[in-house]
Image 1: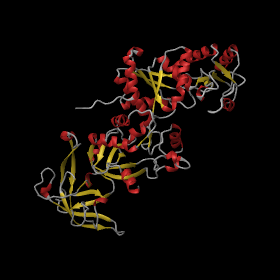
Image 2 (image 1 turned 120 degrees about the vertical axis):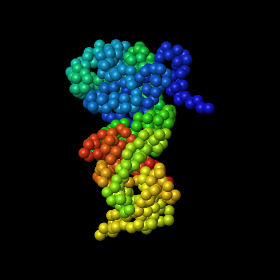
Image 3 (image 1 turned 30 degrees about the vertical axis):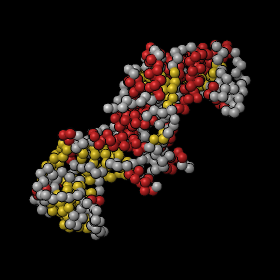
Image 4 (image 1 turned 90 degrees about the vertical axis):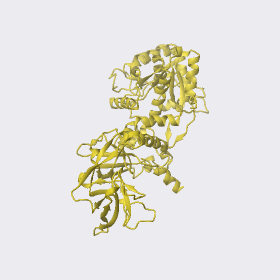
Length: 557
């Protein structure tokens, strides 16, 4: 019998609203990104929350771009955001832009001025900050707070017409300079920016502040549940004040804890630093916590949705172990990734009693975790193979169940072999291993009666293809990079990327496609890089088969 899953606090609010007939039982959420960078895993939590809430209660979700700062925004970011949301598996009801409402927002500002609730202030930003006082001291009015309605209307009109330079004037709400909430001490509503906007061009010389545009845009769209992160709790009184005094649809704001994750930085400003200073390849570098970076690394939409569901929705800030995200992708890929063989650090194995020139085709399942194996593929076999260097030891300890003089192993999907001898080069490096195979020990047809404890992977030398393999790891080696002394970039993991330029892969991997997960047997989960070329295949490691960081932490702890 399945236990009924308890509701999170937002679901409780929505169900109470529906019971009371609020908004006629209608649920409309929104996801309002600013197009000034690529979305990251923290945004994925918000996306999953907003869209899932609407889906659960048969509602809808709007995608609204908060494009109120033309200096930092561009179309590239808009398109990447839309691509990320679609990839996560969600579809928005309407694609909207705050700039759609610039004329309406301007009229709202006029209304506030006419009601004596907004004024044009010529003070500098430093003067305004000083006039607001502090959390323990009340603010003081600037000389411009007493301007008449007529003067404010004229000045605001002239600001709109571009008559004044950037920073020379702002429009402020006239609320309460002694309010204990600093956000209510005559907050800024509009500032002057002579900048080209990616949608409205050069029509506007003034742009609304986030606090003025956000709630009013929600109201215009008749959003019922405006969900944002906890840092906006102090902004909620202003959200309500503006809606009430303008007299428009009463959208309501609710807050939840944002995603904080170990070994990760989730600040667009800091991520942009990493990009601009070339610490990473770009916004979609597979080490970045961006959705596009995770996608390129091989993360699946299902794994990210599962992660967001597992961490839940809370009212209190906490830090999630990045190991949980890695667990979610391992769990998903274990069920969906096709098994293939690749030798990352090759050494040659020659089967001395295998008929010279003979080749055969063996069968391997695509995924043994699925009933029927999800079909299979042909694996060419010959008397010369590449195996991993670490699978042979000249002086093997007692519990080493791979190859060494006199030791036997099973070759995956193939035969049992026993090592007889090996060769070294002039530097003492082992170059070739010589083995005998047991002809009647073929996998699936074994009549040899022999039992071996080890199985190793391999690639046939005459059939092997080559690829570049990129071993990605966590970008930071500090659990909280922002808590380290000095620059957060000092804790960048120097081994977060290792490039293996020549890896031997089985021929079927020539058919690999980006976005498809492959388990390189015994080595981890990989995917074909989106920038791979037919004549130069590049595979990115998504995640290892086990959490080596947890093991290392336990050892060091």
